[in-house]
Length: 119
Image (cartoon, rainbow, N blue to C red; front, side, top):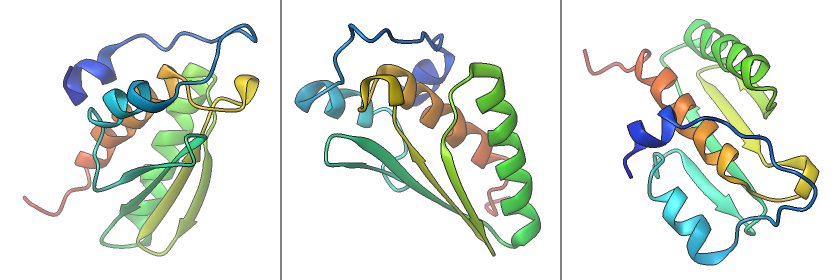
């Protein structure tokens, strides 16, 4: 699967009966998001750092991610600073990673492309 295909998948809420992803499952999904942005921490959560040219772009990206989070009812922790947004995300209901976390990461990767300085 590619990052684009992952971003197009539907975000499906897990249930408390679902198990968090582990090992190879995590690796497969991690391969489909931007590895220069995202890392898997302790098989528990994703942490990503997006860099921007200035505060305004970082702020606008944060707003767009907030809108996405509200649409999907999947809310990451966001830390905004000058030229940088750090995102921390996991599925609280199962206290670990679920497919939806990776779908959201892929969608954030697409949003960040709007701010690329490679024009």
